[in-house]
Image (cartoon, rainbow, N blue to C red; front, side, top):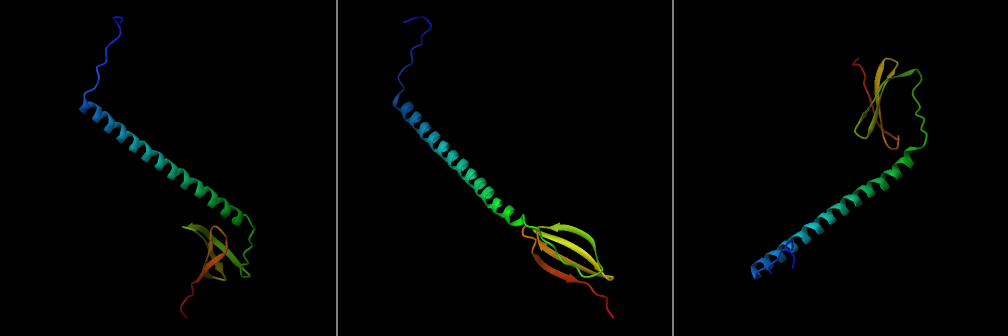
Length: 114
């Protein structure tokens, strides 16, 4: 034995039990972390696959027919809706479309009281 070697004493039974418990806790923590990482990767993959289908649906060209003499006043997004404000002969009309498919979702007309 050289002077730089150190002798490691055998652990006592209490220490061996403590080491075994620490190893078991580290194994549980490692498996929990691996499970959480797998869950996140599965969720991200699901979102990517799901959004690819939407992109294919939204890729088509859509033409909306406006009433004669109508002017687009403004456009905007409200959640998953595209909102278009129209001026139709002095009467304001709001039309909403689904932002993903561009299908009409609703129409709101404003009229003056007689």
